[in-house]
Image (tube, rainbow, N blue to C red; front, side, top):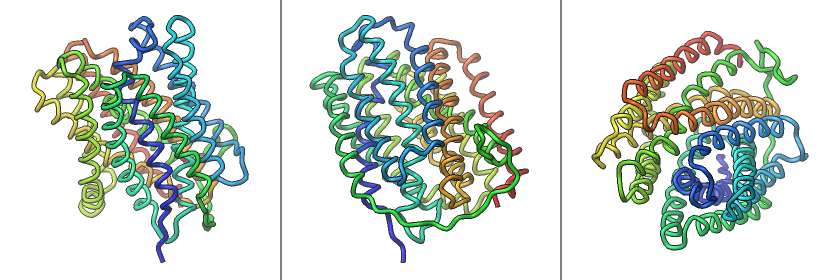
Length: 391
């Protein structure tokens, strides 16, 4: 009999709504909110994202609590603390920028820690559901929550300013924290892993290493919906707030409607390597369209759809590939390595690249995007050579 982790999904929904209440507007609003030099934004994002995710790697692999649901509760508590710090960054000056940096470090620490722990919690709170289905359900539920979060964030941001969005985020994170104490877990069977190297005294299969490296290059594309896309909207559209809101809604609803059909279709008709190639190609097309500096809202939204298709295909397949074990310590290891590669390296570097390429020529931008696309698929090819290492 199948058992779905309903309480876990509900708690995750509150957390996701909290994230999307303020984070989509961070790149366009935080400079004015905390009153610091706009030229410092790319460096703040790069440093805070990298440090936060590096800390999450350490925290995830060195278990603090006996039960994983308490680890999950702690990750949500860090979310609450990070949003609270950013909320008080409106003082400006050194105090403001310090609160922003510490708040963003904690936020990325929370995201990385939560990314691994929430998925392990879902696995342990479910029965008779395969890993790809759990991953797809998580993506589906997070997409609904993100759509609601964007709507709430946009309304509050327009009515009360960015501090209002941060306040609502704090409330939603706290609600997710309270709900986490009602999660019940089930034990899983454990399987071994062979063919590995060691990182931080943790044995990592070569296959997982190559998937993580491929993920780091692909997530440079994933970062662009938060940086390159939002900054392009601000640069070319007077009503950029509405454009950003609609972009995230299109992204969320596209994933809600098509996630299951696209993933099942890819699994049925395409090999894993070809599915990843198609997904990364969609992401490439999305950022190339944005690089044209479009003054058409319709074309701008088309780029969002292509980015959404890449977001549906790539992370879910990568996550399925590295979750072919039911040992909690192996899942922690695989997820934390994937997180450090995709979030600390991919998203951090991607955020920096997105800010840097906003005002660069089309040819320079396409050169960068093409290189990241090529490297993603090269390392996927290398990973497939070692796929049996996980069995």
